[in-house]
Length: 141
Image 1: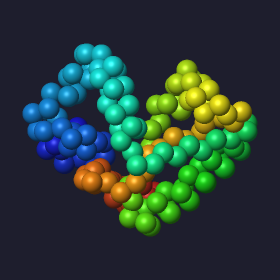
Image 2 (image 1 turned 60 degrees about the horizontal axis):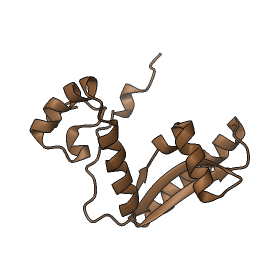
Image 3 (image 1 turned 120 degrees about the vertical axis):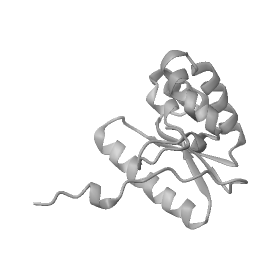
Image 4 (image 1 turned 60 degrees about the vertical axis):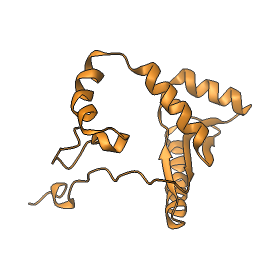
């Protein structure tokens, strides 16, 4: 979304450090130009700049282990935020089977990566993304 958006969902360009002009042309660029290599390099720089990295692994790749990993991650997020740190979830490395396998090999682990994230005290905290109001989700009968 552009930096001028009034919508309560989606990510405005300024959440990605885009100026107004870039946020206006970004949707066109993303629809029509392959920016995957640029994004890959950006993600790599982000990972290398995190003060700390976290990886949650499980022995098996099944629904129960996904739930356990999610519960553990939820508790970690709460602990990290309660210590006034920021956290960034890096989902692409887990969602892409080839990247996930590479991460597992890099870790020399018999376990399967389920979550990958960076955290620490940010020099410049990211802007908050828009949120919908609770009322938009409630069903009135």
